[in-house]
Image (cartoon, rainbow, N blue to C red):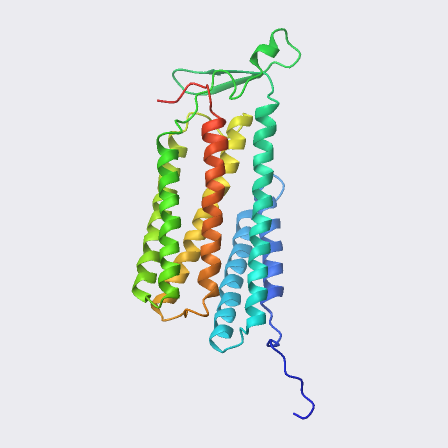
Length: 295
């Protein structure tokens, strides 16, 4: 067309996917609220499930469009740069998300509330008594709370730390293999990273089953499970991310010069690794220092 302007980016046709994703997320939110108040609302789980299906479909449809655009040559250098900016900002938001959990953990640990914890020998149930205002309460202002057993940081937590460090090595191996045109190395590195991620999640699930403290009614347990649990959720998301990359690699996707989808997954995985190192040091080692260890 006469007078047309050449751009270094591609204008996409209108899509219903962003609108569908927004309404699906809103539906999922209201469904979760309804699910938490069954005495006032019915069908909360159904509404939540419908919203979740809509969000999952949005993921699939939107990212399928992105992959199609990449193969069509629409990901020019400018578009690739903006995709990288978007991923960097996403990871930055995730950093601030974990800052909130670390903040809660250090607030509880540096300014502990005087608690008395008694564990029933037969039922293993906890009785937690708040001693604020009572005589001798200052003597029980300690972290972890007096009477609480903690997990041994040198057992399963240390094993999981080594597993994640190894997974960071294997995903880097896969990245370097891709850059040098070694597609078999790419596939093997991705598969090894995925297996290590699954192993980490399995060990963490076992650790939760064996943990000697509950989630509710105790600030130590609440802060512990929220921080480590959300990290575990991110490991699962990262494992799925890498599994999608493995499927794409088997289909012949990614080239040494254009492989942002895999690069984003590798960035995310390294972020998960770094967060775990901080969790291991702050929560398992420093946070349980001096407390009796669960056998």
